[in-house]
Picture 1 (cartoon, one colour):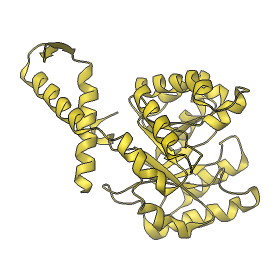
Picture 2 (picture 1 turned 30 degrees about the vertical axis):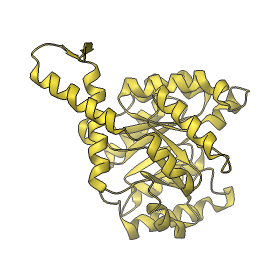
Picture 3 (picture 1 turned 30 degrees about the horizontal axis):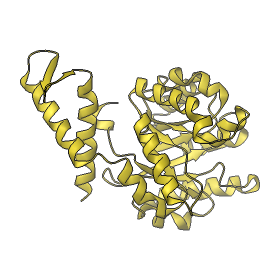
Picture 4 (picture 1 turned 90 degrees about the horizontal axis):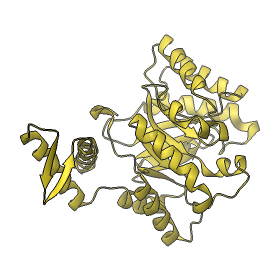
Length: 289
C-alpha cells in the first residue's frame, strides 16, 4: 500500500441502498467507512430502485472529502445480472462512487476484468474485495495482487462458513481468516473483518475485535452505530505504539545499515513499513481533530 493510500479503516457501517435518508446520519457516526449496500440489505424486488437511489445520492452528495469518511457502494456479485447492472449504472453516472465493495468474488480474473473495464472508461474507482466464497479463499493471495485499485480485502465469515459447511465461530473461521490476513499483508492492503452480530454483547464485540487485531486484521464492520466507538478504539494505534513507531523510523533514518538496535533489541528493516503505516494512520486520525 502506498503512503498516499494509507488511511484509517478501523470501522465500517452499511446503509441499505433503498433507504438513502440514512446516509447523512451514517456519515456522522464516526465510522471510517460508510458503505451503501446494494446486495444483502436490499430485497431482490427492490434492487433496481436501490440502484437508482444510490446513483442519485452520489449526484447530490458527491464523492466526499479526503479527510472525511470513505464512501463505498457494495455491489452485487459480478456473476449476477444485478451486479452487471450496478457496474453499468456507475459507468454511466455523472458522479460515480469513489470506491466499490465487490461481493461474492470467486477469482482473480473477475477483478482484472473489472479493472480493465473501468480503466477503459477512464474511471478512478477503488476496490474493496470480499473474500467470502471457498473459491476466493483458495485464490485469496492472487486476488489481493490482482489490481492496484484494491484498498482492502473484506472477510465475509457468514457466507464463507456456509461454503465450508460449518458455523461462523471464531474457532471454525480461524484458518480462513488467517489465509485472508496472509493475502492482505502480501498485497499491502487493509483487511476488514465480519461484523459482530450480537448487539447485546459489547464485551464479545471487543473480545473478537482485539483477537482479530492481534491476528493482523486492520478494521471491522459494524451493524449499529453503538459498536463503532469500540472498533475505533481497538484498531487505533495506542500512544505507546505511535511513540515506538516514531523512534524506530528516526533510528532507521539515522542509520546507514539495514537494521538498528533499540532498547537492546535488534530491529530489521522490514519492520519499518509497519511503523510508517502506524504513524500515517495516527496522523490522519489526529488531523480529523
